[in-house]
Length: 258
Image 1 (cartoon, rainbow, N blue to C red):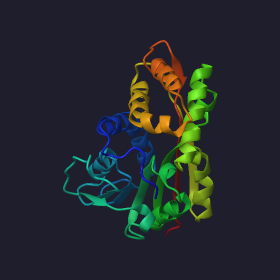
Image 2 (tube, rainbow, N blue to C red; image 1 turned 90 degrees about the vertical axis):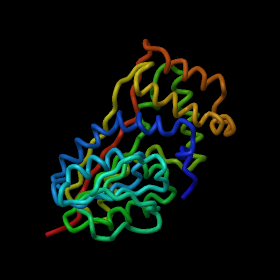
Image 3 (cartoon, rainbow, N blue to C red; image 1 turned 60 degrees about the vertical axis):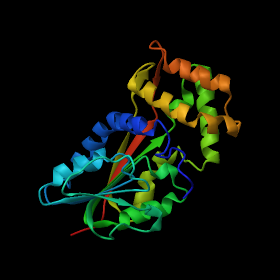
Image 4 (tube, one colour; image 1 turned 60 degrees about the horizontal axis):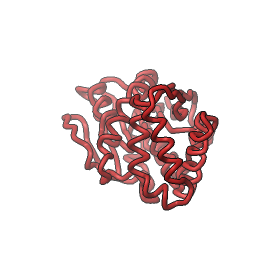
């Protein structure tokens, strides 16, 4: 797969991932609880575990008899130690993780960075047991495409142009349900959630950190100017500016089972 543009070696990546966990973990946990498979004795798999916060929660839910497996390309930002939680360095593009072994498989904000997302999703599904559940959460940039004021909309337009050059698919969220259906999953359902936020909020801090980490790449791409980036960062620092997040699309389905 292409090199991940937000590698764990970047100076602010630990803080950025912690912010992402604080912002998105509550939604992720809510959807996981609704699936009916996360309970004592279950085996769970999270691919692209980041700092391990969701996998740690899963491990506690399936204890004492269940087991949680967490997979990522880079485990350097993980600092979680639980008896029933195992971290593995692996690439989902290489194949399924323990085919047919898991009651739950989940991945969040992973697939939009993968060049061959069709293959990645097939490998995730292949890791399910009969009647096991899969939950995928990915972004869809639809709301920010109409963001205000015009300079912010221009910033996101440049961001999307840059992302396409990086083989990042920021419209993947809307395709998840049809992809799971094509693989034979059942009881497919999902929702897309956005949040309103203003400058100086946690979401504004998240985007400020992300843009600062990627500023050099954004500038070298020619898709954004320093002035436009500075304008966007200025809005992120202004508590009077209100806007809407990406649509985080959560889609689930179940493997055919007994």
